[in-house]
Length: 166
Image (cartoon, rainbow, N blue to C red; front, side):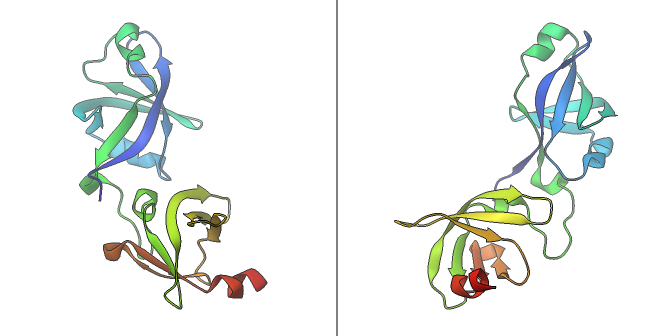
């Protein structure tokens, strides 16, 4: 499993004092309030301040003090170490851990591998790449996803023909 999690992307500068405009890549934007430091380009950087705006955050990072310096960081990612990631509830998983899992049906037939997760209003959808077949989109619902074995990178789902009929 990867050591870093991207929690935001620097989408622009803000003002002339080197502040960075961030698009959050986390469900909990309040997690930024407790940040002492972040990683940008695998280099640890101290967070001076955080301001919230609708759908965005403004971060002031130590050592980025001018507009010219801030521009260099545009489109880069704000990351934290895995151990600093938010705590997940039982049965919740990080998307980056789901990607790459092998998907089997309840009869132990290999269906393919998760290559993406789509967030929808009601539930996530696992995108599964299948050899020689059309990709499979699996709703991440308890009735369909029977078991996730993260230590084995394995997901077991209800037989496709059963839930597609419902």
